Image 1 (tube, rainbow, N blue to C red):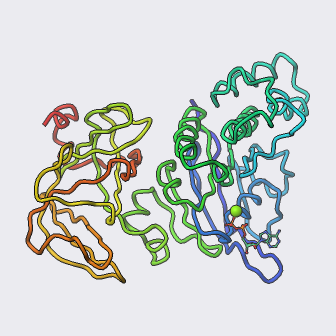
Image 2 (image 1 turned 180 degrees about the vertical axis):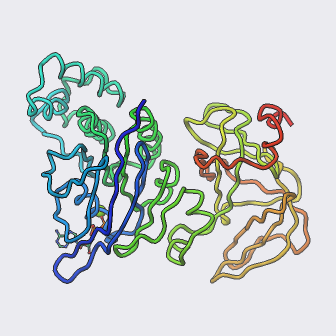
Image 3 (image 1 turned 45 degrees about the horizontal axis):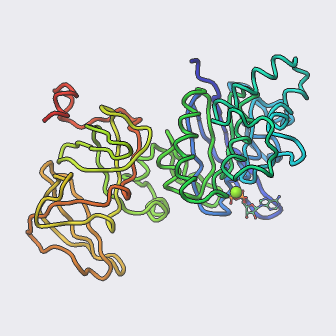
Length: 375
Ligand SMILES: Nc1ncnc2c1ncn2[C@@H]1O[C@H](COP(=O)(O)OP(=O)(O)O)[C@@H](O)[C@H]1O
Ligand SMILES: [Mg+2]
């Protein structure tokens, strides 16, 4: 499918009276990417999104969509749709009419509308819900209707402002994968606003970390995680242990991952066998044992200790030279200097990201992936 929705932002600037909320930001977003704007509350995420959508005026700079400046166009003339945190459905209209609303306003033919609504409902897995009223639906279902309403217009760009925040944790985690999959199917650009770094990590091709109206860093989740460029990014994202590997086996949601320094378990949906993944695990969730733990075969030697605030980290060097941290509050329960330890963790604590950078473990380069996985 042809990818659509290139967005170019040049020196975009915005103040509300003497509050300078967006400071000359420039971003180049390629078509068909999933981009997250990540940052704390009040850093200007919603304001940037509203300026792209045309709901907010700009003070300076330019916004181009697919090569054309849109800053003088009203919202309805921009080839995009927005999904908000609140569902914003018409309460007196059923699901079908809610989704068809925009197409009717554009004067589309009845048969055309029917086809488009049916297709949109299928994409958000709500076939058969046409006659339901919003009040008869759960939060997750209502948010799916909002998304169907955005995609039915076939925009080249969808803007999503914290769309999962109102949902409970379990549903929120499931919807992350659904949204990512939907974006891949549509082949259009998603700009996704969130203050939740884990959400941004698992969904995005690129993350733009914002702070006080400035871009702190733009990069892949792995780059942001492992190579934070500023102290703010490093503080906001937090320390992590990162592994690049390939999925050797999948049992329901349990992934058996192989990396250069050994095997381990993780949990993830929508990941298949032989796929390359990046895995991150927090130092405080990294556990150690004197003996191997089933499903895990990463081991190393304790080389050093680091003291940061009330935490102490043991630095473990793995066989491939990579260093991993085990952190504990007040340094209790850490292995000793020079000790040989086996590392493991609760598979659910591991954050699984699809490898979009194409950086694969060195060993695979000289070897067939299938052979490497069997090793
Ligand atoms: N319409 C407005 N009028 C005045 N100030 C606003 C308006 N909208 C947002 N702000 C201010 O702009 C800053 C950025 O807000 P916002 O873009 O909503 O941040 P975020 O979405 O990252 O939480 C905040 O200080 C907020 O109070
Ligand atoms: Mg906001």
